[in-house]
Image (tube, rainbow, N blue to C red):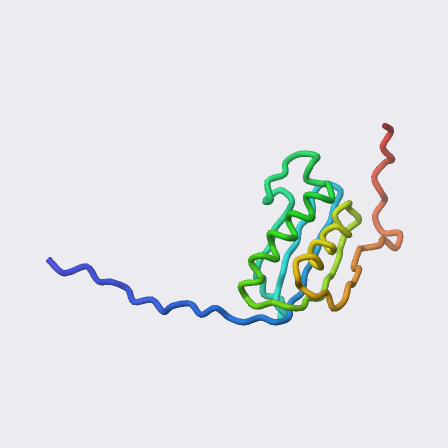
Length: 130
């Protein structure tokens, strides 16, 4: 009977990423924060749902703030110091997520709004009657 072979694995190096891009997707139901390097490789992400909020509390600005802090804590291990922010969507967590980024010690270089605006494409949903 032969001996079981052990695999030799290389130790992963912690790479240093001084600049990054923060993508904030804010809908009426949830806020998703993704932090990438300049090439677009994802370093960390968090959402209001992954931060522990369920139901209608996911769409609150406080939930977006907690999710942004959660995503930034992972990126500080990469040595990130400045970011560019790209926002999509019209939800309630837009501004509070940016404030959480600025309050965490990472400098925000620029803020860009890429919210999609229809140029009379699809017909909109019928109006809600509340």
